[in-house]
Amino acid sequence: MSSNEIKRATNATVNSVTTSPTLRPWDVGPVVIELQELLRAHGFKVGVTGEFDSYTEDAVLIFQRQQGIRIDAIVGPKTWAALKIKVKPGTRILRRGLSGQTYTNCKGYCA
Image (tube, rainbow, N blue to C red; front, top):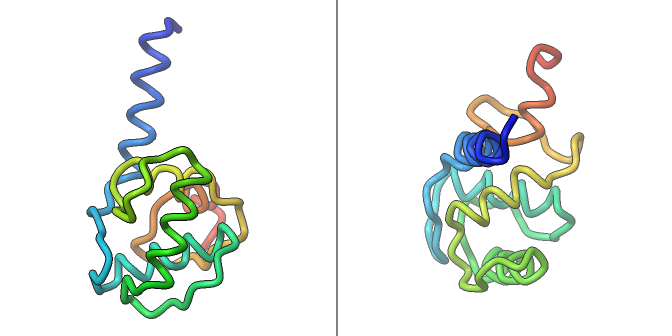
């Protein structure tokens, strides 16, 4: 496999994992719940409220700094990829509609 093929395969994997919409502070809804659950899986103590509140914003800023991602509190493709790909298996509650490495590792084994 050439380096270009590896790069394309890696980009395809990241793109398939990061199909979540861009989130900004004060957004609300089920996608914010997924964000909060991922932040909790990474060790942040945020409530799972579905509201992108100041606690969630602070956790996103710290996570972005730790990952070397642009620090802007906007959860776009790069932040989603880091959250989903780098999450440790077993740290997330699996639910219908979730994506990311935990789900990928579980395919065929989880109900």
